[in-house]
Length: 363
Image (cartoon, rainbow, N blue to C red):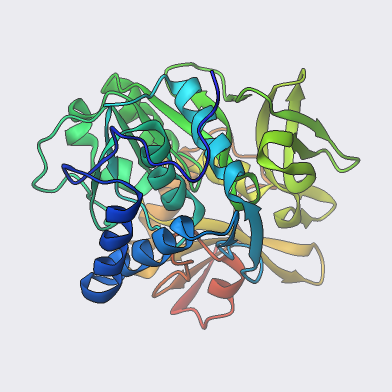
């Protein structure tokens, strides 16, 4: 069977209950740009770019770890990504899907492309931490951030298949999803790979990601993931994500190699430590370091001040984490009024630390 091409709009595609072809979808895009809210304007701009006569499209990265940049893609590569997701998750024409992600970045763009290409019935709502507010519909397929999933736990019976991406899933959320018996998957991907290229089932105890079909992975000398995906026009993409490799299509994510902290000669990966701490710390935090004359880098815990949690409570909770080594126990706690994030909600560690902390506690 011949694959769909980027110029086609599936005849079963519905947007908020209405059927649209290529021309009428352009009218919707114009309406979003002229009369829509902030998020609808982004959607309108994207649809106009997608529906124009060009076979290429520019997509901007999130800017989580570096300055945002615009990358040129062939539109057919986005179609191929949508088809791969549909095949892997068995999502097809007529299925009901919820779009609750910012369309200014790749995850939100790909959710729309999946609907257009696969023929999904898509409900579009403005991104929020609780996208199921006053929504009692049942959906076959939903994509969320971890924060959205956490705030939608009471609505999980309305989702048949859920994918979660954008940042790591905490132990607290992981256990809650298992308790709710949700058919949920954590995804791994980025703008450069046109959203996810690998997933892992929440129901499985293993933290191994399994690659989608036609994805080839390896490691470089640093132990970081490399990706080849001809159908996505990805040729030897070298990432900064350190992994443990299992065969040709499976890996465990360790963390970003450029975030590694060297404290007294001991290398500590912040993401791995944060995952440990997520069993005992029920608030927003992250692990970072400051310069130290003796250790080189001194480990610190950065906490969002708005929680107004007693410092003794934080110390007691840290002591509850039996798996922490002496090197992994923070030496200071920095409290900030807010965390700097990208528009897609991803933490910007360096920029957050450049702010003046509200207070600092020595441990």
